[in-house]
Image (cartoon, rainbow, N blue to C red; front, side):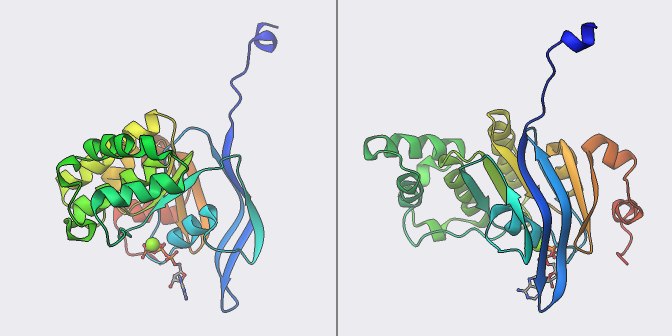
Length: 239
Ligand SMILES: Nc1ncnc2c1ncn2[C@@H]1O[C@H](COP(=O)(O)OP(=O)(O)OP(=O)(O)O)[C@@H](O)[C@H]1O
Ligand SMILES: [Mg+2]
């Protein structure tokens, strides 16, 4: 009786995919009958090269049109950070300003907000520098805080630290953990298992375009639901 009366924590769905399929030249590359991402993250997406991680991320973000199926989400603001940062040929500050303007932040507020985020990324001292002359790690930090400055409800990231050194990677992870704690739903592809353990609350494992594991991170690393994931964790070459 008590249980019936106790308020239930209702898991909210941040994003769901239904019967989602993506094809290239008639060949199915992603096949997701059903996927629900609950409100709480981060979700880390793992899988071998060519498993369909990047395509899946782009489909979920709406950058690709599926052959069939659909993605539903109550989130109105989403952003994506790519493996190679895409920055404007302008100053660091102008890159921030452009994103903030697009997000509808008033001119009066933009400068202060931009500097706040640059500060968080350790880039306030480089505000006037041309963005494309930043180092790789600095560019990726800029791409990340530029995405966060638009206050996305969901943030997709495709291997954002794959070419970064350990300290630059750590800087990115710190920013991501803070954003996650502040309520940004993070969905991220990585090849770095340590990073997946450090950041992930939930793991998705893709195999030949199909979702074969969706598990809490600690469970996944102890006992993955699919032999392909077990092999991947052991470092076997994928079949
Ligand atoms: N534009 C395209 N034209 C043809 N095939 C493509 C295209 N984009 C992706 N593919 C193929 O779809 C499959 C999935 O690609 P995807 O980029 O999603 O893999 P991934 O899991 O992100 O791999 P990686 O770990 O190497 O980044 C691969 O076999 C890839 O060759
Ligand atoms: Mg990829």
